[in-house]
Length: 78
Image 1 (spheres, one colour):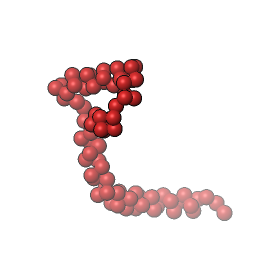
Image 2 (spheres, helix red, strand yellow):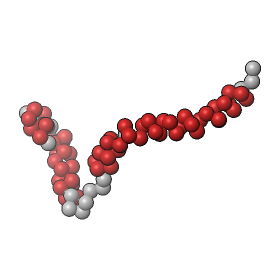
Image 3 (cartoon, one colour):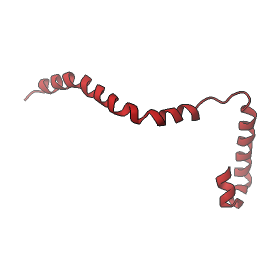
């Protein structure tokens, strides 16, 4: 038995399988894709100082260990 019939069969059916996979997954991935684009958008110039300060707070908390003293409510708010 040779592999040629298998490869030929695969080459003939692959485009149809890919099309049906895209047709199936496209509507199911629309909402996650929307949120991905929103969450991974680059920060605006107005948001950069806030992001830098937030990062400084995280680093400071990690260095001092102050994150260990936060309540559950305080942890969920930040």
